[in-house]
Image (tube, rainbow, N blue to C red):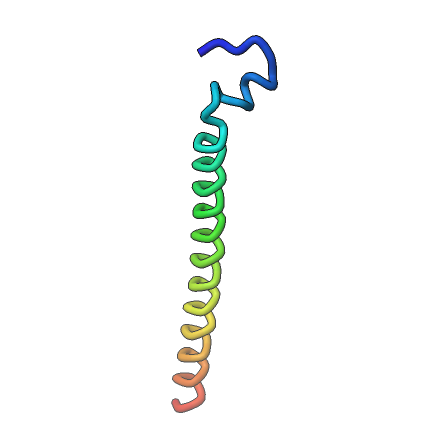
Length: 59
């Protein structure tokens, strides 16, 4: 596609709501997924650390 101005580009031929909305939803999903993965990783590392410490103290 060819746009004559920046405003035409952002308007996306009248489909801007759908185009930019889909980009926004996708970006939000990626950010949420990254935050959930980071949280799960921290929890797993904390659990492993606690398990290791409990094994060391019971020996």
